[in-house]
Structures are given as C-alpha cells and as structure tokens.
Image (tube, rainbow, N blue to C red; front, side, top):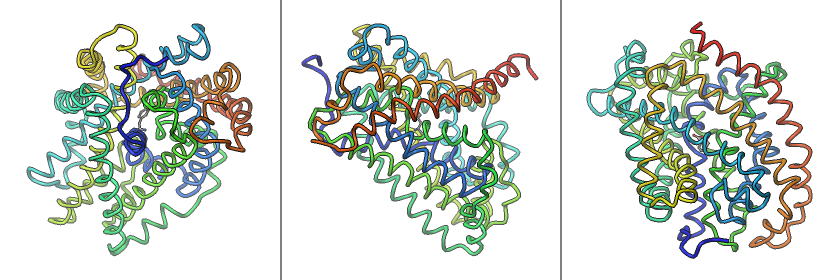
Length: 445
Ligand code: PHE
C-alpha cells in the first residue's frame, strides 16, 4: 500500500486542474488544428469527439482506477494488481514519457521563441523563411533547454507545491485567454470563411484508414492516455474522489479547449486571406501561417500573438509536467532518489535526448508518429487487456468514492472487447506505416 509519506493533492479541484493541465496542451492547439485541416474539417472533429467518448473516456477511467487503487507510479502499480509479468508495460510507459517529452520540449521551445519574438520586435511576414532557423539547430536546442529547466524546477517542487500550484494558477488563465481570443476572432471581417472551412464536413475523407488512425492517435495524445500520466496523477488521490465524474470533466475540458482553439485559429487565418497557406505539414497552421496573420494585423497582432503564444506555453508546460512526473515518480519508486534529484537527473537525460529532435526536424516528426501510433495506442491496447482481463476487480476501485455506478459492467466490457478490437485494428495499419517512416529516416531518404 501507500507509504505513509506519499504525497497528496491538496484538493479535488487541484487534481482536476492538474489532470486537465496534462490533457490540454500542444495537442489541442498544434496537432488538433492541423489534423482537422488535413482530414475533412468538421467530419474529423466529429470522429474525434466520438472516439474520445467511446475509446478515450473508458481508458482514462481505467488509468485513474489503477493509479488510485495502487498508490504507486506505473511500474509498481501494474505489478500491484497484475503481478510482475506486467512490469515491462510500466517500463514502456516510462520510456514513452522519455521519448514524448524529448520532442515535446523542442516544440514547446519554439513557442517560447515565438513569444520572445513578439515581445522584442513583433512578427514580420518573413517568419515563414525564418521558421527553418528557429525550428532546427542550436537556437531550437537552447529554447528547449530553457523550457525543460522550468519544467524540472516545477516538478522538483513536488505534487502539491509544484505541479498543483502551477496548474491552479495557470489553467484558468489559459481558459480565459483561449475563450477571449475566440470571441475576438469572431469579430474579424472574413471570419465566416474560417468557420466554413473548419465546420463544414467532408465525410468522404472519414473512410480512409489514415484518418481513423489520426483521430484515434489524437484522442489518446490529447487526453494524455496510454503511457501512465493520468495513472500517476491519480496515484496521489484518496479513495473519496468520484472518478467517473472527474474523468468526464477532464475529457470535456480537453475536447472543449481543442474545439475552441479551432475557433481561434481558422477565423484568424481566413480573415487575413492566408487560407492558401494552411499547409498540411505538422507545423504549418500554427507556426507559419498564424504568425503571418499576426504580422499583418500590425499592433493588435502583437497583443493577440503574445496572448496566443502565452496560452500555448502554459498548455505545453502543464502537459510537460505530467510527462516528466511519470518518469520522476517511477525513478523515486525504483531507486529511492529524492524528488529534486530525480527531477534533475531524469529531466536532464530527456533534455539531452531532445537534442536529436532539436537538430533534425525529421526526427521530431518521426518521434511524434512513433509515440502516437505505437507507444500510446499500443499502451492503451495493453491497458485495456490489463483492466479488462488481468486486474481482479476494477469495478470496486471505481465504486470507491462514486457509489454504485450502474454502467460499470458496460465499462468493463468496453475495455474487454470493444476498445481493444478497435485499437488492434488501428494498430495493424499504423505500425507498418510508422516502421516505414522510421526506416526512411535512417536510410536518409
Ligand atoms: N495531452 C498533451 C497535449 O495534448 C500531451 C501529452 C501526451 C501529455 C501524453 C502527457 C502524456 O499536449
């Protein structure tokens, strides 16, 4: 059971805000907007929402039940309920935290750099040409290091004084800014064309396996599922929390912010006539087209741009904290290190690993594909099998603090049959594609 000294969130809302902080991040603004743009607009949005509810939510509740029940970081938590045979899965989670944070930190570094540009002399329309210098090389690495140091310091302060305090302070700010920007965007002439683009549905695209894969990967990435982040955060909870209610709030906030972020991004781009520049590349919409829009808006653009990139930094930071926490809490469990020691050693190693993504954007792209398609979807698949078949009585873990929830048998059966079959189907397609992308990277083509 829990050691007597295990840390605790100081309040229910502290946990919820931290978990929402983990979920809401670059995924909601950077990945979501380009995926929606690429994959048929509203049709993709609908598919994504359906998958979040049908697949993401059950897995989120599963992670929370394991973490709170075991009161340990992933490796020990899985062993607690399933025996040592499940430890390797926990180790894969830790490895996923390492890999994801290594490139996530680089992208977060770009957002820091962009905020810096707005503060110093504002965006110019040449930002597209400069993006190459910003995104790769020593500059990218330096800002990545800066971002990682802040993350390490916060996580080093602990669950309550570090992660919770930062989330409670920053998340309401993020919500206010994103909603405020969406309202502002609605007032722009030409915003309507952006809404049309974002909200008109091209259902024909939905039947491509690639789109299903993207939507499933995005649902997992955006909810921070499949690598034990939510599991770890829930391990600092007491048994009086109502996990089903909280999982719904977390998923709702995550989808809500992604949706509202789209209401910011597309009207801005279309109002400034830059729609032909929404490139399908991973970085296009957010890091090239949008800053061009800010540049063309003049003085107002500086304020709007600063707020936008500030919100991105906040989202990235609260998500990075959870990625690092998975690794740090596991190191504390395993090696008995102090939290500060673990934060600097693990965070330092991740920062160094991130140099590969910082110096070669193709590594970043392939790492993102690998993380989503294989690590998170594969991790989610294994988690379903764990809770569906191996864990003795997951329903009773959920019932603690929630009372008798009538649909718990449905939940268990979703995890037993429906979700793993779906994820298995997606994985069969995603794994070969990802392996080809990795092979291409190494062969240099
Ligand atoms: N959910 C975060 C985002 O959308 C990313 C993340 C993935 C965080 C996995 C933790 C674990 O940006």
